[in-house]
Amino acid sequence: MRYSSWMVTAAVLSLVGCGSSTSPYGGGGGGGGGGGGSSATITVGNDFFNPTPNTVSAGAVTFRWATPSNGHTLTWDSGPGTLPANTGTITSGTQVVILQPGTYQYHCSIHGGPGTGMHGTIVVQ
Ligand SMILES: [Cu+2]
Image (cartoon, rainbow, N blue to C red):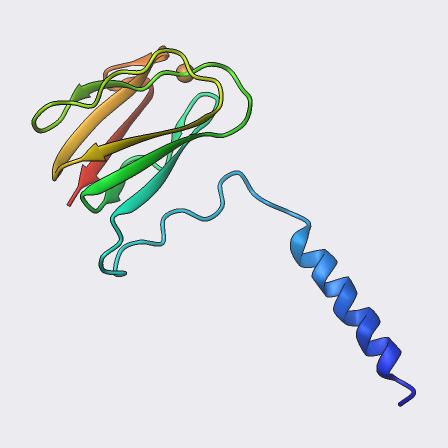
């Protein structure tokens, strides 16, 4: 098989090509029709929440600080029942909040305020 080494080379090149880029805005969304998903992830960037508004199923929502970055807070403005605890300034890692059905408004107290600047909306179904 003379051409087999060519095929291997081509396969390796295409693998390298595929793995080369990871967009900070990639993934996410998706949900919609897929029943039963009770978790979602929201990226905390500089200085935005993504995605927002975000429609999720009731349950756990994970906020993921995108990079070692500027500090941001999760400060809750409105929503059903008892709101999740506000965080202090966080620069990395994740925070998981449990949300019940309804619409929540939140913001970063450093870079936004209720409905302005770095803020977001979560619709929990
Ligand atoms: Cu912020």
